[in-house]
Image (cartoon, rainbow, N blue to C red; front, side, top):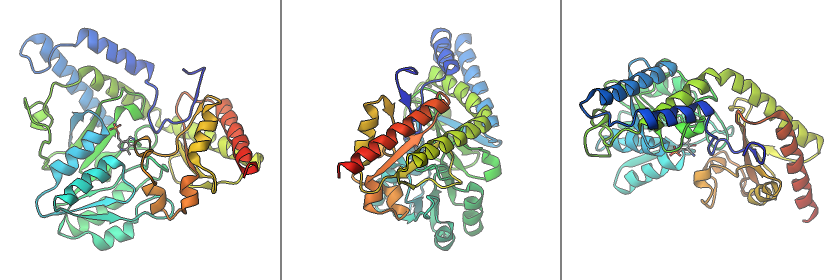
Length: 379
Ligand code: PMP
């Protein structure tokens, strides 16, 4: 795959890291025993899962937190929102949340929960002045993503915690960190968030495994019932291979975070400079403070989807926005940032990964510039 395609849609998913794939194969072959069984081999599997969890928590600065492994970020977000919300409490989410938060909130709303939507600033971050003015003792849970999957905008979790806890110390603060690991620093205890979501396939791990990391003492009720695994919070036999693959990938991604950031900063610069050199006009939706690995840009008057397919003809794979919402008629995040319909329709998302090279980034930008010119000329 590496030689055939230029893959620039790493925010949708990443290719699996060789070390994570090896950990999965090893676990499938040697650690297939059910961790809930009573014999020694099973206890060994349980110990390996516990050790890996401990290491993962440590690397995320999550002292005083526990972990619930899930089938991915979607399930982790559903667990905290459905399982963390108390009766007659109000839910606050940001207007730019991923559908796994947004649709979950909508379901609660349809069942009578009051839901407020924190607006976005022009740079894609959540409006914290609005949050300051609207959080009350009635608020039961606040869910604001760490890094936007659409633009790479980073929300300041420490500040969010400060604002909310000042007014309501019992309110649960959750952050969807699916796009954060390997792209920006994560220190949960320092930020003070009560719950944090992650997903393995966004940082070189396997698909279908993720986790909700929850501060000890935070009341969360299960949404999946059965044999009572994972302290009753997520029944079902643990996905040993997936979890060990995820923990291996997280170890590498977290260690490589600073280098990746420097690498992607360079890629972003090359990409934009190549567009500039080719004199094509675009509007950046990703701000200077965004994670450099995600670059959203708009070609007003053109269609992002048409550009995506023109690049696909050259074996260059990009996104038009979140893969999960690519079928939605509009883009909530860009709309929330005040972008015009023309800018929203003309948006594409480039997202870098550890497999990319400067040469392919330059080549992709040059081909994109040609495609833009071709479309402009045919107008
Ligand atoms: N949240 C965010 C911010 C995401 O980018 C994604 C993946 N598009 C998800 C949640 C859902 O992740 P998963 O595929 O693991 O369910």
